[in-house]
Length: 140
Image 1 (cartoon, rainbow, N blue to C red):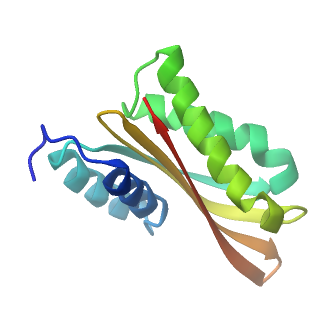
Image 2: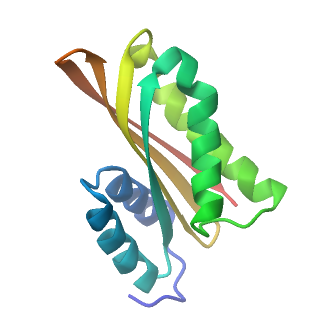
């Protein structure tokens, strides 16, 4: 695969899922290094807290991480695409998360006009955990 090839939504979404499911900062760096060779920019950010109070923070952290890591620029359209994809991912997990604590990682990936955000979390009370994953995609 070459860096100047534009990959579709499936490949970019797979990259976001891989970043969200990485086990450590070292894994994140290795995955990110491999993805950049293929022209896919990626980032990940850890997150945890009470879901009901976390939604605005989830959106903010996702946009900030995408900008900080160079996945997107600072245009209003790019920030809106990240926020929209993050919101879609949140909508997919909200029913299961309501009233519980969550902890995990947000993965973000972009190539050409495709941008995906994946949220991969353990949620629950004490040691009674479940797993949720949400994925959103937008065109930039």
